[in-house]
Length: 231
Image (cartoon, rainbow, N blue to C red; front, side, top):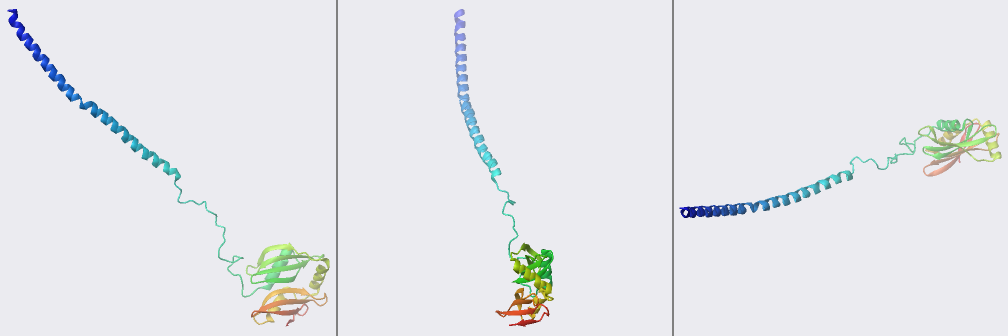
């Protein structure tokens, strides 16, 4: 009786063993791709993050080096350019108001009398003698602006010259402004270049150089009467 039951038990055991073998084999075959898939996924994820991070870092570093478009560090505007020295737009006025020019020179010197005028166009150097000691000063006056643009500065002259200049201005009744206008009238189209007071104290004479048509004419103006003579 016991022998008849051993055969089925063994048969069943064999069937179970074969079944487990098949199941284990199947499980082993199904798990093989899993590690490969996990490894591949992990490997591909890391380079992707690394590659995307590099450009991001490079883009951030470029921003501070960009130069502003409104950079105003250039040389400041110094105001130079086309124009005239007096800023008025007129370098050579057609006429000069000699009264204004001489008065500006006298005011800059603090008083006195004009003993000479030299220049051209807009710019005129006015020499003034004043004070009991015959001190002389000079200033540059703009005929267009009607004001001093440089000076006054002391003019170095010896004692004899300053004393003679002071004596002439005391006896002269024709001042520099009147003498300049008379000298220009004496020459057709004349433009004054210089005017100097000279002669003896009792007979002062203004000597002027007047330019016209490319030539220079000497004109004398009597310091007492104002009469002009071209020579």
